[in-house]
Amino acid sequence: QVQLVESGGGLVQPGGSLRLSCAASGSIFGIYAMNWYRQAPGKQRELVASITSGSSTNYADSVKGRFTISNDNAKNTVYLEMNSLMPEDTAVYYCNVYGRTIAGTLRYYWGQGTQVTVSS
Image (tube, rainbow, N blue to C red):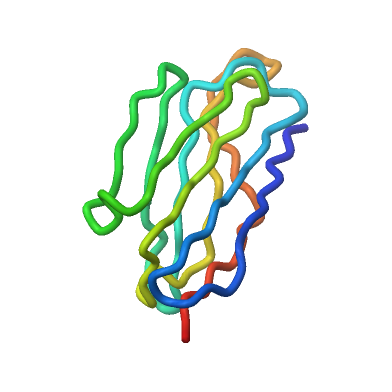
């Protein structure tokens, strides 16, 4: 069983910052990529940022220059530093991990989500 524990969400004013964390634990044998998705009310879930085990990163155009994804492979943890937050960043943010199971297969795992609200 694999657990993804997210933290760091909350309410912040426009222009503010938040840092999300997601730690993976349990029966996962090798992590190849860690991602952050978000889903706003009435909208589809979208990929915000991704990072590979080799630290290659990719960002949605809407967050480039404002968000930074990073990881700590030793701790199986991924972070999302969010700066210059805007009301349109309001969403539930989900951690997503692509890794190898005990059976040797590859699959995605999802966290429970953490609410980020940007409002004055």
